[in-house]
Length: 425
Image 1 (cartoon, one colour):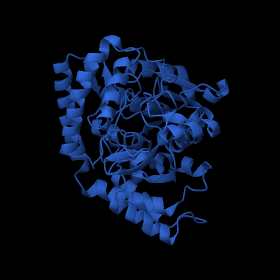
Image 2: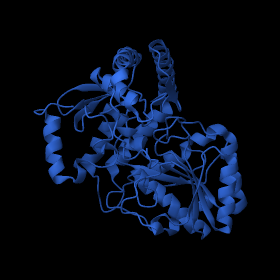
Image 3: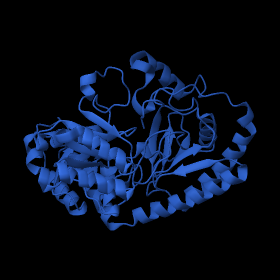
């Protein structure tokens, strides 16, 4: 834990007085080991610095928005240029049209785009659009999947009433029979099926989408007239330059995007096919900052880099090198160490670790060696990472496994996490 006189500790104490709980959301107090910093001062490339000036190689990438590197010179220059001309105006600039054109040219199922700010904005718009299109109420979601933080989808029950969660049926991800049963239960009231690009629930092993499950979702929507929604907010552009389900030959009617679309500048988007165009035009959605031009300038530069560079191939190769090296070092230390999900969005869990005491200890040891990993959430690779960074990570991991081996017999239990039973990310 940070020392009593550290800047981070001082900020925590001040925050406790003026912010409920001292922190909220995915950085809430107690969701990470006590020695993890709560406050940061800057980021550059693949690294972040905490409020006390300590530097870390960051495998959280701001929980996903960092795709090409913190403070990317070309992306941020585009942002600053537009900021000098105008940002939050009475209406959008022409950049919004350019951005919609660029996205619909890149994502094969998309014929139109609506922009917003957060992933939850986009997924809620998709829900509303599906209900407007079908004139039905019921949506199917997978157990444990995360689609945002409004009452209809938040993983925490506090303040949520039954009507907030009405007209939702849950199935098991990658289980076609479970999905079929959920659709049968919905009957003629099915408005939409929501799907994650892959199973990226917290605390449990990740899994690639089963093509049979994806095809079943598409078939059920085609048979019933419901809309298929693929939620790309977390994984978008780290698996494909297209919608990620295009890799398995399944196209959605709607997809939701955010996080890295503008490389850390706040922007999210709902993309859709012509089938749902009239419904999308009929709903009322807006925000005072949804038309900000500087963010859209940053997004256009981000999309240019997505189109014109080999970023995806590089981060995929780095992720595979990392995965192989960690497996070798974990085995040498005698640990069952599970790495699941795509190599660009890995999740690390230990065998025989129901309360995460091994995971918390190992993550803290990695942090002490200058590498920021997460004990229960999927991580992200970014294009600013290098082979040298991966080598540093593997060296840190070797030391962290050795430290865990020494400490394992006496590790204290980790207090049960608030999200552990809530299916949160």
